[in-house]
Image 1 (cartoon, helix red, strand yellow):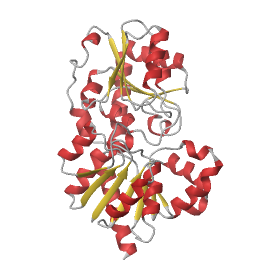
Image 2 (cartoon, rainbow, N blue to C red):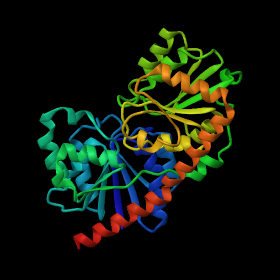
Image 3 (cartoon, one colour):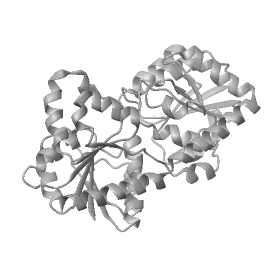
Image 4 (cartoon, rainbow, N blue to C red):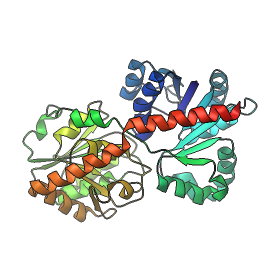
Length: 363
């Protein structure tokens, strides 16, 4: 099959990392796979996809991801493919418009349990029309499906399915620790790491506030970029922890960074199914997460949960793990076993099966 994926960009994020892990494997199975990204800015993830042999089609570098001009480009591209698979809001909507009269099978993936437009009733009629144009809506977790059905209505139950996101668990389990990324932390007794985009659904500020409550030999590595990064840098400075909070930007050596850390933390307001969560658990490190939708379902009984936005509770959990190695090792072992349930091979098989069923149905 010829499959076109459509996404806003290939910057760091769960949907973007899924593309890097999934698309080359689908291609190895015999599918012809390409991805069109609205944002033409080059990124490390884009280079990884190109190196794997996946065709990367670029929108304009200066073109807004919300520009309707993408509809014309999509309409031209879509004619050459058997299945169109979208990710993120603007690709979902623009592909639906571009497909009018073409009749291509449309699939989309919902990567979170919520988004900002669901808070405004004015968008509901648009979304109802848009989702009605799709043969399948994939939710990456049961909480994500429940949230979407609450928004759209139960009549979409037969259209929505759940395919859990996955990662290459072997890659993270076998990576070697790298301590050369930042000389300033070589003296640190304890390293905490968070890998996440600096976006509105993430909650790096709570981790930064927790650092103020921890001893001076605790250092935090923040991997990622996004619109909230400057506010987080200002917060670290205002709290007097800027020398212990390190902003590493977008990195391609995340497996090595995770191995170098002592504890992996994911602090969010909500999630779909966090790939950074699974990566941290695969690395064999104790994992701590906010007790919110999309995280508690994966972490409960394996890693540790702390109350949403409770910096004091997070700091206490971090310190307990660092001061009790046996306890930390037990948590890490449970996390590693849990992550194996979400290996990318299972995700790949589910996507392949869905694509084949869709093409049979539309013949």
